[in-house]
Image 1: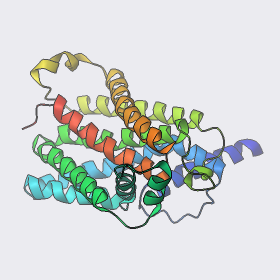
Image 2 (image 1 turned 45 degrees about the vertical axis):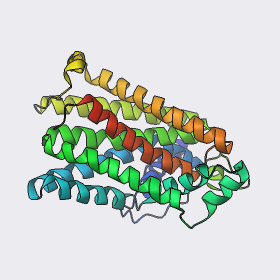
Image 3 (image 1 turned 90 degrees about the vertical axis):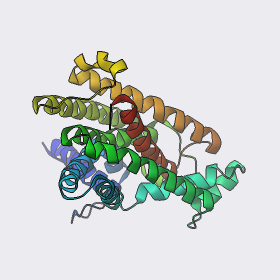
Length: 285
């Protein structure tokens, strides 16, 4: 019983750590971030994504009723950034400065460690924000149910792949850093996280349909209308890991692995790509 209680405590600490690590949501609990706790936190990254998705969905519904689509989408994007404390955007800018400098591996890692932001970091950040906003505008005007389905699941899958990236690729820096915190075997926890994301996605799709929602698919994709909730979850998993895998392989080839900055960059880029994929699949006006 004592061992079971200790294990349950580790899993609870993992959930709290995932929330504290990936968001700025106030949780007045102090937890020591041991490797055992951090490894277990990977399984809860999709849960954190669902929490963020629920907050974005509820806020989007309110903003849609109160404001025109353009400022509503802009404010929702600001909230999206604020909920994470711009943590992942910071990683995106550092990664862009390093990788797009086209220097040696060692020099790119040095640039990414510099707290100053360069021109490429600013350019990539602005491009990502504009792309997100441009898709969120039609999501808010296409009906509350349609927009909520997308806003709910995009953060889930971007963070699911972030956990997978931690587990599947080596850490690029030697001598400490974020990678040193996640010591030990991480793959089972990332795999569990993918299973949780699949379960959350299937549940969200089922609830969406029971609530009377219909996806306005483009005519060429009407064959997907009969897809069940689990199949939709599997398709989201496949699209996410295909897109994320290409990005992670490219980054790892340049740097000899991944870093904390690239984890954040992968999250931001995947959020954009998944939103664009939704815009491609759906008939948004």
